[in-house]
Length: 450
Image (cartoon, rainbow, N blue to C red; front, side):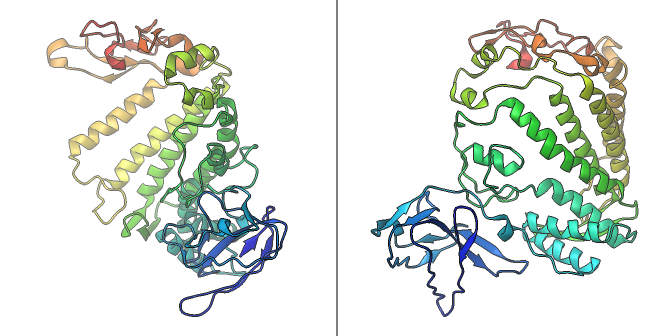
């Protein structure tokens, strides 16, 4: 299939014969791209963008015949034996990264049953096609929102899972607004090579371009694009009943596992922690020229000098919500541990190999860290048999969630050499123990930074 620079289809032909051959006619005097499509319209559809070197956008100035020869698709791209740019009248128009969305997103059958939507979604998931799987699970949830059976729970669980693993990494043609994850790849100058979180063949340069999004632009994208999807997935998981159970094939290992409510709780805890992280960073000034920083090899001191407001407190309001999310993370993680404690190896998440004491200790640690969100709490009792409580580590996260300038807590730098923290208590967070300025080898650098 050929498309123009605006993603409009301009020509299509079906290859035939053994080996398969085709002739396609494209307009003269305009740019076009080719896409080779295998198993079109099926769950196993594959799309191979046509490339010559780094070019996938071609301009033909006159009426000519271009013999591509054999076209190899084994790398995920369609690459010809014969270089079309050697033909007089054919020139490179650069690269347009990605695939038109109407090719990527499946056309769902009208009136499909909940059972068939789930089955097709699980098949796509097992094949690693997360975007397609997400589309089917989304349709299952939206078309059957009130289904209280295990099928309804299955749709909600896997929609939540694919919402956070199936972000669209393809180009949408406008990378300036950062309204998709694919925009970040575009702005990093990553070439297209099969953008998938499960099999990321995308090639990104070691040094980011100067126009890579600033820290504040990335903050906006995290808040406007990523956080709503995470919160939507949490809402899906909140609607899953405790009786949920489903066998499925994990795409990386192709091993069949069983998931149940323990997996729901673990996933929900992870998503809640992720939302908390986004809320925390949104409280701080993160604005910086990241592209320029990636070029500078004397990275940290120069970066801090060039960005005097970086990591200063901008707005403490999101911190309260972050603490609530972290508290819920602790509750769900504890409940998840209880649920999966008896799981066999047939389950996706299992605690096999962990002793009852190790499990009890983990739950106690989670409870202590949750308590430290609101008050001074002993999170590590040290060696009470020798030192009593003198070596206990006591933490109180209340000052942090009330609002601290992280920038003011950073150590000074001499070149690339960090000095001691100006406040080893980190604004009162470390009440006792855990000396951040400990320097056993007396070289003037805190051991924690070596």
